[in-house]
Length: 404
Image (cartoon, rainbow, N blue to C red):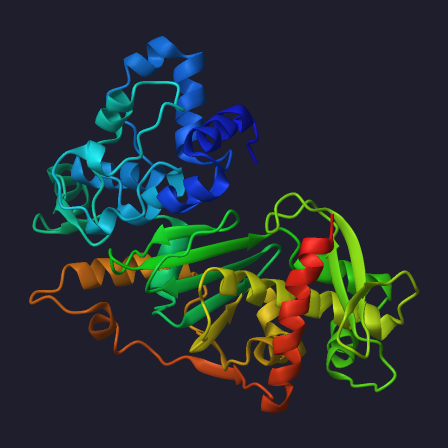
């Protein structure tokens, strides 16, 4: 929620030549919450304290430091959320820390000093050492216990859900989040590309949407409906309905950035998008609102270069709404699954990664987690709707460009 570093973000983007150039280097355009801007602010406002700082950790690497009794390195995947790590770090084979970090004259301290304090990052499956004797003496943890690098909550959730290239995860919560596993990176001005926590030469995409389940609940309450009635309306078909695309952001949106308001467009008989100023029926309003939310997600993941969905895994409270899940299946033209035993996917992902990274002889992640329960299928797409939704995705992208 911290937006106090906006001037540092602007300075960073300007130094790189724009949002797209910074995203190409670090995986994201500048965001106020990202670590390098917070460090820059601290260094400028507290120069003596910064000078006396020996090491800068992320929360994830600091937690590992407690188990090691020594400084733990930042891992590639969580480090990707700093606006400072090169997202091609998986292909760098150098020993000096400066090779991995992005050096520009936009930060409020010398490049060499911050690289020294951050130290050299490591792949997420790195074994950092053995547990400190304190834990053995106090808690009886075996002295040969190996400590694996920690990562962030979203990369750890990707590991917990065992996403592989071709998979998508859609978390339907208070806010909505899309995670995707990628063979290659196509950074965008909005959204994030991280180094994949399971394979240092692959990537994960992350898209965040502030207007998620609370926005869906708001429109349900607008018509005094139960969730059962709301779901039934979603799947009803009425030949009298107009074809409406709705962009509706009650709160300032994250993707697309800072948009707030409501825009309506009608698709005429020729397939042309026109501004709509009339009154919507209850069904038109509900259906266009929900489909607009899901069309946005498909539109944005395709901008990341993601074209074919092998599996789409849903999590979060709204994943229990089978009618909503069916709409998602139809729009993405993908089978929808969930993983019942993985409610806390980030914690489970940490356990899976620790198990996988310490296998001797080494195993692939898929081999190490092969005995874990199968996903449960929730829905399959209605193939006859593929052409219709393919055209709607293109029109939604146009509508997003037109909205101001």
